[in-house]
Image 1 (cartoon, rainbow, N blue to C red):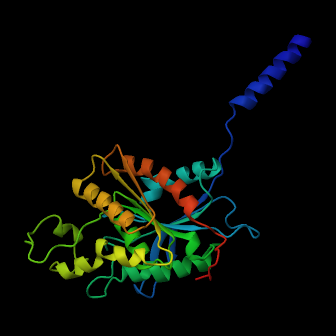
Image 2 (image 1 turned 45 degrees about the vertical axis):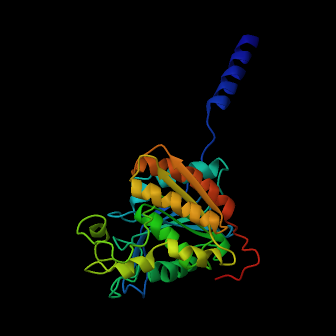
Image 3 (image 1 turned 90 degrees about the vertical axis):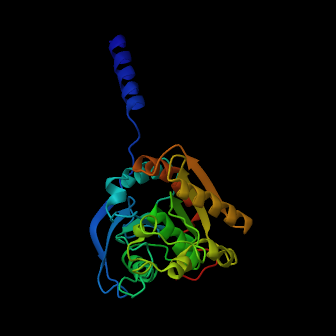
Length: 301
């Protein structure tokens, strides 16, 4: 009998040791639509809600607006990027705070307002979307608890919005961001890449002055003077497109010289989901430390 008891105790302890802790399971809402007067139609989106986010007595939460790349859509980060599982794991392990993640559809807009005003994407995502998300979900609804992020074209969009609206966003994440310098006056404008990759986003035919007005480098002095400026997390793969690696590194140096909080990581990888799935993990941990849902010294906006 004593031997049997010992065996049962050992077996029970073995089960307790072997069983991994259960991870919190967030909820993914697909087919979400947010009204946008700026666009004249709804913005499709996918939304991640951490466990307990919609409980009646639940806390107000920070929000990350996470953008797709060229040719992508609002479902990319959940499908190809497996972001829901990553968020569940990192939140459960205590490496990041629970947050709402909103992934909107922006098409191939390059996240800007187009020349004819037919696709006012920048206006829509920084005004209509933010207001609609704050109205629908338990967000902290303040700058200190709001951030942007994205990959490739979306990484550029995330930085663009943080630079243009430092009153709205406390931080921005760019993974392999499409970070280009202004095109000098008199530079030859040959057909083909990189100009054709922009479609009609900067005019058709391509308008160099319009493109230059939306580039990031000239915005650095202004955003650095904001009170306070957003914090920035930049990554690139060491085998990524050289122009993007170059733009990422040069922007990091420009931000540091301007006195801004900029974090740079260069990973072993290419311009692909393997790189972005790995890079988003430390980016989320970094972001968590830069958001504050208590909205200190802020008026909700």
